[in-house]
Image (cartoon, rainbow, N blue to C red; front, top):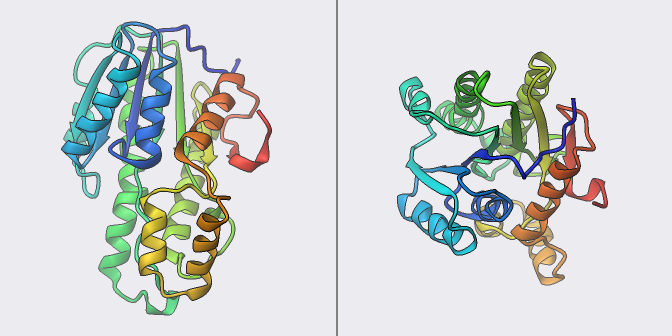
Length: 260
């Protein structure tokens, strides 16, 4: 089975966290690749952010359908997840981008004693993603020729960074979920993509609110040295990897792993 995405085929694309940052950029950049009558579904909590993304998509491709779904993925119901695929889709392939996520509280591990904080964080970043993926994949299987699932992960899933306990633990759990999912679902192409350090609102949060001076200085230096990536840089690499298909389903690929 070839793993490469064939963008000459009519597609359904679903992007979570599509109101800003990497998710918004994925939605815009992949829209440039889609053939007429393809459809893209944008999911995020911010209705205004989704509206902006939709407008930016139409600036690059007016021949596709764009649907926005304002949905709070902190605690989505099974019904809300199922309703995303309400309707018939005359498409050949589907690509799901699980991008939704947040940085969480940036504090030393021993200070993270609020059980509700942990529950809320994993609800959004792990549990809702797992349930949404299961519902979408079940709903699309048998209705499309090819099905792709892309999880946006992070180097923090493997390498410990001070003050990033919540973020690292969530990314590690989520990454392992998708690796097991890939093992079980042989007819679904799965990619875990680590986008590298990207200049988004998340970097602002790290600089403004982390307790660790070392972590703050690291990200300030990244910005000042202009070594930090722009969203379009990492998304272009992601789309190149998908177009080439040179990976095994379930693989974890970092921005810096390959020249493509």
